[in-house]
Length: 375
Image (cartoon, rainbow, N blue to C red):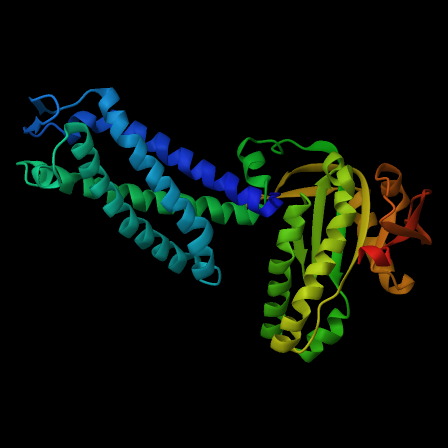
């Protein structure tokens, strides 16, 4: 079974969530294992015929915390990756945060409460009634539930913040930002794809501003998966235009940067009946692809962004502007085609040349289409 990049990303996030909860639960247990069971109680171990009294050893505490951490991780991953996106995708940050906190608390509390009871039953070989009726258990459980509520709230705040910042910087950029990769400007070779909506002016005239905004938002949402599938990073949105970028090695591998455009086109073809029904118009994109050396770094004070500066960015934009004149859906520079060898799935046609103002070098531009058998 082959997983898509989107599914692999989801699985990776789920594993990180589960691992995080197991580690946090273990640390929590190591920190307060003496507190949890310092209330005086004695339970009869029917297997050994002896009485056991808390507090327990660190190993016993870890045995308790690991299953609970794993269960919390699995449930949180399901909530965060499957349930919540369907509920809060169109809600404000504050409302989505409130829903996330409530969801975490409501689901976490019974897991921890019954998890503790079940583990008591297993470790002490006793019954449910003996555990819950033991003097001191109720007060200890109440303290634990209070801690769980605080922990769940902090977790929800943390997850909400990370997801918000990750969306702001873009897929794969948050970690680089935290590690300070671009704190100092650095030169690197990158591929850029400038892509915008065909007939955007006439479509905007047909729709009012709010409806046009929703139309664009639906498009950008729908094309996110193929961009992720082909390892692209969304650099920025400018009106009806989206700019996607790759490191040079990632973009030329398996023709990802070129295949990405056609994967996007296929998604839009499938979605067009929905767009026509909802908005009365269809969506088609045109794009320009080019590569080159750029300077990458953080910029700004009141508002910080990671930006790319260099001729490669401006040239890609100019190539995309040639699509209408050449009646092409995808134009690719000769510089990029020299690095990215096309397979026989694509047809290459001479498009034209582009001379940049103040530059002697002339950029050759080619139209790339798919063979009919690959459509």
